[in-house]
Amino acid sequence: MQVSAILAEKGHDVATAMPDAPMMAIIEDLADKNIGAIVITNAQNGVAGIISERDVVRALAQNGASVVDQPVSTFMTQSVVTCAEHESSHDLMAKMTSGRFRHLPVVSDTHLVGIISIGDIVKARIEEVQREAEALRDYIASS
Ligand code: AMP
Image (cartoon, rainbow, N blue to C red):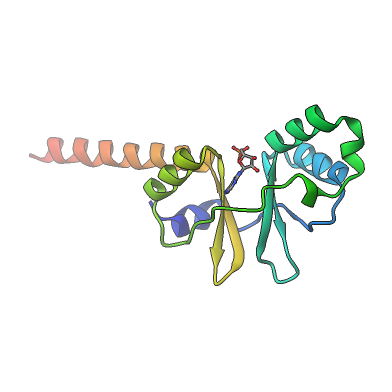
């Protein structure tokens, strides 16, 4: 399944924040929206970084509670791997496995247009397998 098809089903909404957002706002957003990562964007809606719940835990463990008043830019991952709408769920699985992360921002012309999580990939793969099984059943029943 292509990224564009996954986005057509789940929508293009992405939780974002600017690099100067305080960590407390990030933590509240992760909790309120029940999500695992927030994409940090620049003024042109390009990807400037990503912060996931793992980064928050690491920052708190290493620096203590004062982290909440510091800007997210201090703790985000700056070198973000992204994907394009024409890529397949297989391409994304390979990127997530080799990079050991669970989120891939979708970029078109340097602009952020969506995000795919490992949960979205698993859902897409299950639907694909179900469709294949149905097609096989229909084929067997008709032959
Ligand atoms: P996650 O598995 O998404 O919770 O992220 C695990 C670690 O990888 C955290 O340090 C994230 O900041 C980082 N990370 C998450 N997604 C990406 C990505 N697409 N590119 C680079 N690093 C990422």
